[in-house]
Every structure is written in structure tokens, then in C-alpha cells.
Length: 557
Image (cartoon, rainbow, N blue to C red; front, side, top):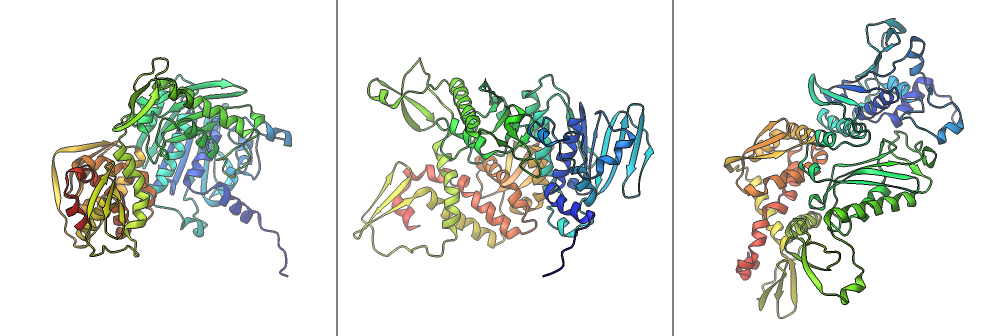
């Protein structure tokens, strides 16, 4: 048996850093936690190269005296807890006292802090002795060259733009959770966010719009509920803004940004009668419970929590969401048995989809404006991925068909002597479109359609970052793009793309932007993903025109 050896303190810290510090966004999270605990009312973040070269956080909090400046970077040194009992009543963002020490073990760190009437700084890469500095009350921590001494970790980092988008996720979460704090974000010496302090303590809709910069924020439904020791505050996306994928979903427990699948399911369950199956809406939910009823010490990066009674929490959220959306949409619930006893009234939950519900309490007709054609095509994308490259696809027999029928504008039925075929016309149209576009790509022919009026699309900072990183790829396809802060202007498009489908294509791409970016310069893979997304929008008009087609000709083609 090999000899047992005790690891060095340096190696222990670097191993611990692997759990606490995953990427630049992890560093930012820990530093903002410290600023909030210090009572800061202004937090400024500076980034270089997506945080890989620099993550700097400055605040106007209480600062640290000289004697604590060095001690703060020692392992497991904290002022937040002192005994085991304190772990069950944590009211601060940080508490373990390990973050600064682990960051120091894998990066070049400099700290300057002003406290009372004096200020001191330490440059840890030089000497660990506090020196007098000029600074107002507060603290600045600069973390440079993350993972410079652990190349094995550094090689797993993504591009600077991808890491920047991960940082935005963290920054946005804190900006939403703490509207009273003035947040500033500077990227490569350019100010990206300057979010002034708001009067609201818990959630401010103006702040939400400043952060997310999306039109759906105006339609979000405020939610507020309190009872049984649980307080719920938040904003729920309107059912008309539902989609298969949603990136703008935020959960906070006692103002701590976390993610909990149970809370997410409870929200979707509360919305189940208002949106199609598998669709989601954007939401911001803030949950407040007693500190001793939730364990925040269950995840290395404090991204998850554990409730003593999770089902009570989930039921409270589900009921609050259901009642709130019900009132906002004026769609009251009627027991199924009453359908047989009263006169039904016709309405439209989604355009072109007729529903029947019982009129109760003068319920008004409900229109959420989402079309079934959009829904069906979006749902079929996953199916398309499997059929587009299928090698075992059966070829059409030479046997003549007797008749062709169309059902519900969705399916084509072909009758033969030996049986029938049932074809999903959406999937078939996607297959035809995919193969046509793939041939065009392989032939390297670029056919461009100039737009008389440029198409403009509102985009978030993360989406802007993605487009800048992949602009050359889309220009090679035939797009002429101009990115102007949070607006994408499109002046030309590939000839195969309908003008009306441009915005939907880019929205689909934004949903999987990190997957595309991680492919870096692999154009073949990017093109394949692009084609998989295109059929869902390009073939809309083709599908809608099926009723007017000669179906026999379509089948032969």
C-alpha cells in the first residue's frame, strides 16, 4: 500500500477552489456577497476579457481595519458564525470564510480597504504586509489572471464572451434581488450597466426592465402572497409570453439567488391551465422564510438550499401563482361536472384553437395570442433532430396510392391497396426544407436578399455578446448585421429565409447560444444547428398553404 501523506496547505486550498471557484462568475458571486454583508449601497464591477484577466469589485460598505485585512484571506476565517448553532440561523450571504482564501490560491489578488479614518492595501503577489493607501470607506478586491497557476483548470474555461455571459447571469440576479443597491458594471473599460438605487426594497419593476431589457417585462403579472410563515413576492410572465425555452427565470430565497427544481415545477404547475404543455414563462420569485427553516449550507457555491418542509413551500407557490394568473386573466376555474349542467360558451385560449368552458362570474373571452402552428412546429424540433439524419428511413414504394386526405391541417393520410400511411406534414415540410438548404450550403452558393426596411430586434446584453462573437459566421450565411447596443439591425438575409421569420430564427438561436458558442470555429456544426432551427420558421407559410396544394404532387415531390 502506498505511503499516506498529508497534503500541503497550498494544495488543499487549490482543491477547495475547484469546488468554490468554478469560473470568473463564481469569483464575482463571492465578492458581491461580501459587499452586501458589509452593508454596501453601491457596488461597482470591472471586468477584463470576460473576467479571465480581471474581476474587480468595489463597494462603499463598512470596510476592514488593518488587522483584519490579511486575516480575511486565511482559510475558514469569518465573522459571520462562531458555533454549530449559528449554522441553523444564517442571515448573511457569506458565512464559511473560505471563498477569499480559495480565490487567493488560484489568482493574483490585491485588496484595498478603508475603515474609519484610515485605509490599507495588500498586493498578495508581492508581499503580505498591509501598506497605507488612499481610499474612502469601503473595499476593493481585484482578482487578476484566474487559474494562472493551474493550467489544467484554465484550459476548461470558455471564450471571453461566453464567460462574460455567465458573469451577466450572476450580476443580473443580484441587481434584481437588491434594487436599493446602486450597481455598476464595466466591461473592458466600457460601462455596460449603471443601475441607480430604487426605493423598493424587494422588487422594482423599473429595475427589472433596466436589467432584462425585454418587452415582456411590461406584461409581467405581480404576485404577492403571505401565510403559514411563507412570504412570496415576484413577477410572473404573462401566458402570451410563454415559449418552449426561457432563459429569464430567477429564484431567490431570503434574497439569496438560488435554483430549486421543486420551485420551478410548482410555478409551472400553477400555470398549467394557462399555457401549453412543456411551455414556460419568464418569472422572478422571491421567497422569504424563517432562517431556521431553510439550510443554505448544502452546496459548495451556495447555489441551492434545502427546506425543512419543501412540500409546504411548493404548494404555497403553486397556489399563489395559480390564483394570481387566474385573477389577471379573468379565467376562473369551473369543476368538470358543471360542464354537463350549464350552457357552454365558446372562447379562444390560443388563436385558431377552439375551447369550451362554462361561463361563471361573467368570465370574459380569453385570448393569449399564441398560435397553434407556432406551438406544433416548436414541439417538433426535437423530433426533427432524429428524423433529419435517419439512415433507416423507408423509401417510397412504387405502389400507386388510391387517395390522399388531410386531417386537421396537421396530418396527411395516404391510402394504398396494402394499407395507409400517416404523415406529419410539419415534419415532412421540415425534412424537405432541411435537405434543400443543406444542398445550397454544400454548393457554397450565397444568395442574399436585401431588405427595403431593416428588421430591428431588441436584444439583451448576453445576446449582444453572443452575436458579436459569432458575427462572421452569420455574415458568411448572408446576413448583414449591425449591433447597436441593445438593438440588432438586419439589412440583408439569406434568400431562403422569409422576412417574417427572421426574428423567430434569432430568438431560437439565442435560446441555445451557449451551445453554439462552445463549438467555437466549427462552422459545420454551427451550420447544422442553424438548419435544425430554421425549418421551424421557414416552412410556416408552406405548411399553412397545404390546404391549397395538390397533395398528390406534394407526396411525389
